[in-house]
Image 1 (cartoon, helix red, strand yellow):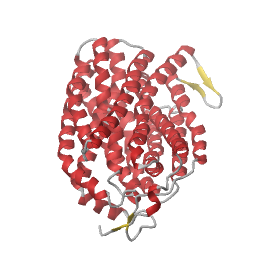
Image 2 (cartoon, rainbow, N blue to C red):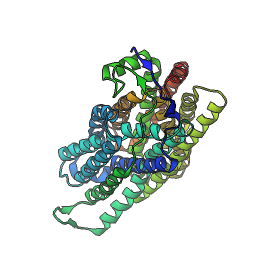
Image 3 (cartoon, rainbow, N blue to C red):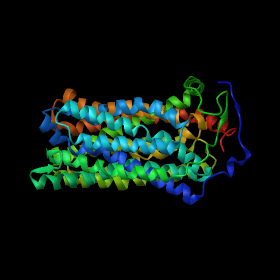
Image 4 (spheres, rainbow, N blue to C red):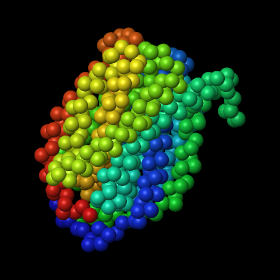
Length: 451
C-alpha cells in the first residue's frame, strides 16, 4: 500500500479526561461481561436442552459454537468497517440491544432449529461490540495506560464467562425448584428457557447508557487517498499481506488458544455434572468461580508481565509473554481432566485457567498497536472472524466430535478435553515464537504514525 503518514502535533495531548475515559471503559467492560454471559450460558444447560430436543453432544455443540460463531464472524467484517467510519458509541448501543433481545428470544424457542436461528441472532448482535470498543479504548487512553485499559476490557471474557456459570447455575436451580413457570404473554416455559430470558434482559437497560458517552477524537491516523475515512478493504488486505508473518501468526496463534479455551469452557461444567455428579448450581459455581477469579488474575498478570518486559527493552514483550503462557499451560491443561477426582481437577484448574486465558488482553493490544486507526475496526473484525470461526465454532465442536466419533462414549468426555488441549496449546506456542521477529519490526514501523 502506498501511503504517507500524518500525525497531528496535538494528538498526544488530545485525549479525554481520565474520568471520561474511565466512564466509557466501565460501560464497555459491562457490555463485554454481559456479552459473555449471554454467549456462554448454554454451557450450564447442556443436559436439559439435550433432553428436550433429543440431540447428541455434537449437535449441542453446534448450538453453543457454530450457530453463534458463524454469524458473529461474518457480521463482524461489515460492522468493523462501520466502526472505522461512523459513531462507535451508537454502534455499540445498537449491538447490545440486538444480542440482548435475541438471547431472550432463545428462551422462547421450541425446537433445535428455532434455537439455532436465535443463537445466530445473538452472534450477529455481539459482532458489533469489540471492533468499536477497541477503537474507543485506543482513542480514549494515553499510550502508557492503554495496555491496562485493554486488559480491563478483556477481563469481561473471564468475568462474563464465570458469571454465566455461577448465575446460570443458580438461576436454573431456582427456576427448576419452582415447578411450573408461566410468564405473561408467553405462557409455559421450562427452567432453561426462563434462565435465558433472565440473563438477556439487563442488556436493554445498559444500551441506553452508551448514549451518554462522549466519543473521543480519532488518533493514530495513517494518511492515504482515503484519509478522511476508513481505508478500503482492499488496501487493508494489502497492508496485512505485506506484514503477513506477524498478522497470520497472531491470528492463528490466538485462534488455537481460543479453540482450546472455548472447548474447555463449554464442556467443563458438563464434565463436573456427568463425571462427578455435581448439580447445575454446584458445577456452575465451582467452575465459574475458577474462571472468574483465576481468569481475571491471568489477564491482569499477563499485562503486568508484558509491561515489565517492555520496561526492560523487549519490543516483542506481548508476544513473548503469550509464548511463555502457552508453554506453561500445556501440562496443567492436559492433566486437569484426567486426574480422576473432582478435588484434584479443581486444584489443577486454578493454574490452568490463569495461564490459558492470560493472552486475551495483550493479544488485543498486540494487534491494535501495530494497526493504523482507520484500519483498527476492520482488522479487529478479521481477528474476531478468525478466533470465532476457528476458536468458538470449531473448538467446541471438535471437542464434542472427539467424544462422539473418536472415543464414542459420553463418559469419556475427560479424554476429549485433554486431547483438545494437548493439540492446540503446543501449536499456538510455536506460532508465537515464530512471530517474534516480525512483531518487533511491525512495532518499530508503527512508531511513525502512533500517537
